[in-house]
Amino acid sequence: MSGSAPYAGDWDNLNSTVGGRLFEGTPFAQPCYTKGFNSPECLAVRSSYLDEVARTNVPGAYIQTQWETCQTVEDDQSLLDSTNPNAREPALPPRQCRLGSVPEHFIDIQSAEDVAAAFQFVKRTKVPLVIKNTGAGVQWGEAYAFAEANNITIVGAGSDRSVGAAGGWLQGGGHGALSNTMGLGVDRVLQYKVVTPDGQYRIANDCQNEDLFYALRGGGGGTFGVVLEATVLASPQVTLQTVIVSFTPSTARTRELWDILADNGLKWAEEGWGGFSASNVAIWINPGSNKDDAAKSMDPLIQYGKRLQSEGVEGAQTVVTEFPSWGTFFNTFTKEHVAVVGSSLALASRLISKENFETPSNRSALVSALLAADAATPGLIILISAPSSFPSTGKTSVTDAWRSSLYHVTVVSPWNWDATVEEKRGHYSAVSKSIDHLRKITPDAAYVNEADVYEPNHEFAFWGKHYPELLRLKEKFDPDHLLDCWQCVGWNPKSSRYGCYLEQPSIPIIHEEL
View 1 (cartoon, rainbow, N blue to C red):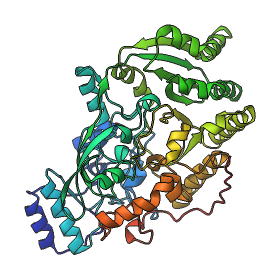
View 2 (view 1 turned 180 degrees about the horizontal axis):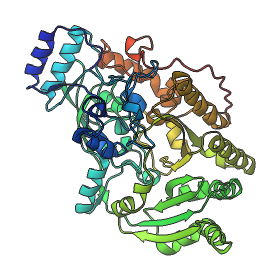
View 3 (view 1 turned 90 degrees about the horizontal axis):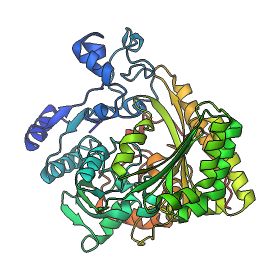
């Protein structure tokens, strides 16, 4: 909850209604500003500043720290140095502890009645309300441990253990390295228990509240209600055939790697492979193959890795192995490939269509665009996580472009605590220009949870033909727009709650359909 204007008595009454679980919001790094830099409280913050799990346990902390700040106002924040959290400078006078974009109040939700009370309160007082899931529910790292203990497979976030299992990840689509053959999160969710803005507790599945179930299967988090529980499909434990090639990158080596990936992209997708790649690594996994077939399928990549080793390329390694389960793979490798934690960054993404892989000229254009984007904003990640081999039920609301894509590509541009407003604006412009190399050659589609904050034509890019129906359902379930979030279905871009967002950069977007 933020932007409050109610009387103190209103807050007291709300606190009483929710069982004393209304708390004031505080920035994660507040103790370093108010209790002394060497205080025990600040030392605890400094030691965990770059820890994703620690951040999810604090209501006022976010994985990417720009969401703790008011980006339009200099120094309206309470941050530490993401490159060295033990540096004193960010907390030295005249800088003061400021709330930034951290909400002034939080409710620790324990029941449907708590949610109904919050909705009633904001409807009466006009206090903006947002939903913060991660830290409140089960995180994928915990879910994977449960799956391992029970010899099952659940499909979740590809490399980040702190992502919430039932929040925005799931409601926005939810992709991972197993999605090619086992589907997106929205393909595998069986039921939601949710409180809608009218205060009603509803069960949404294929048999009841089917339209709400559809909306929650891709329409985005924080839009249609507060999800208290999600039931997802579990599959038998799978054995993963795994191929990893890594090396010290150079433009020529990266181009050759990505050429191999592009040349074999359609074939590998049909054979069940998924994974990740960056300029210096390719990690491929297959839950439905055996050692011999996997080695034969992946031979072009394996031979490339062995050649780099024979040439003495620094850091060159080739790993061909088998894991008994998703959890064992996740615990071994993906911990080295988590999202940036404790830093501010601009992010943009693009879904890459199968059409981009169908001809030599299309593949060449794709690899050139990937290299150009990575050169513009180093750190590009190719996520081979589209459900390209998983049949759609036709009952989800994510853009249908997910079904005709092979890659989901992300680019980032980070900044530190002392960036100026103009520098921040420059980073947003940088990622938008970077991903434009891919916008020019792909259909108009991006993943809502990892998109450019200023995504052009976002309604179509995120939801395609589903947007009109999602907008109708937004009006049905939230006619008073008690829930509103940036570029979400039915959002109000003129709302005062967006005062800390920078204005949209004036970037010409050139788009061509293949």
